[in-house]
Length: 505
Image (cartoon, rainbow, N blue to C red; front, side):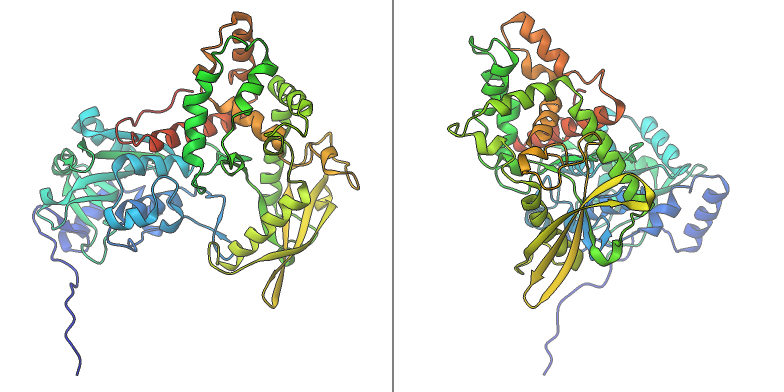
């Protein structure tokens, strides 16, 4: 005997005030908006329209939809060989289990958008106006280079539920109505609503944060950020590391015995939290060996060239020279030496990356399956007749199966020949401790060094860490890391919902 199962199949869309997109009136609004040129953003969004996979994932679904519509490369695999934004990948600012239970706040969604590499402007209703909102809606409806995610309360539209996120897919100027591409497609279809009423729905206060709701204006940066380095909050130690860099370091440099750059570096690096290396990562390019052969695709070659240029620019900074000199002075008796030195030589790093790459390529990243890299081989290729590239090949074993994985390694152009030498002679071949620490120091806010008492040293540090004179690629890389650090610090303080402003550059 079958038992009846309680459940819901959709909801009837309250109309008015909303107009069902598929109704005769909704179709007419759509046609007229197309004719008036205010549906240009619709086509990209509808191409990536998705239904939220969990009842509380409206924010994550809206964001992944917009990120894919803007063609922002996540820089990591989703499943198989595909790089693609999915709700499951948007976990850098709030654990997915917590989002699944309680949803996500407006501020945390802003954090996620930043960390995903988008250009974000966030406005609460108490920081904007209906007229400004209308201007932004028109702007994103007449082009496909920006999109708006609205945070609003459903009750204003006589709908069931409370706070909700969804992208705005278009605008009808004659009737002043916006098209909401509702990501809860199992509940309500896309629908038109009066813009003034949508603003009213956004003016409601989120009970969890005691803040007004609002909207996100999301666009694509003129180039993908995080070409070579990125900050990670995957390891639980990120909270301590972020606090150390933003709170403790400014106090450490205030001591009287900080008289030169070497001492500044000593003070900063001598107290680094454990697992510091898990906080800042360099971004590797991984592919199946059988997919690559002896050649690089134009896309692979372009990305690798940019990585190499960023690496070269890091190594040409004055700060890099000080970092190299300091790390070289460390002896084995220093308890922090292994943390700062190149403890992982290229083959060891490559073995780890190959294992992770094999997991990603098989679509089983984070599963209980165990991957082991049996061997690695460093090779030099002249890809497509261009300059030599460094290729680390690994054979990864999982049970009875094995897979060949290649890691494309950025190389400093003037330090390409280290075949047969030890790891200590290969510092220019891949992003190592010297490069990573230099990039991170450049990314710290300028006010970090304000407490240095020696005026001459203070001016020298300001000169060394200034982004104003950096080449444009490195400047953007550093500012991207600085934004990430700013946002992670706000998350660590649980203040991301209080301060949505752009971090100082």
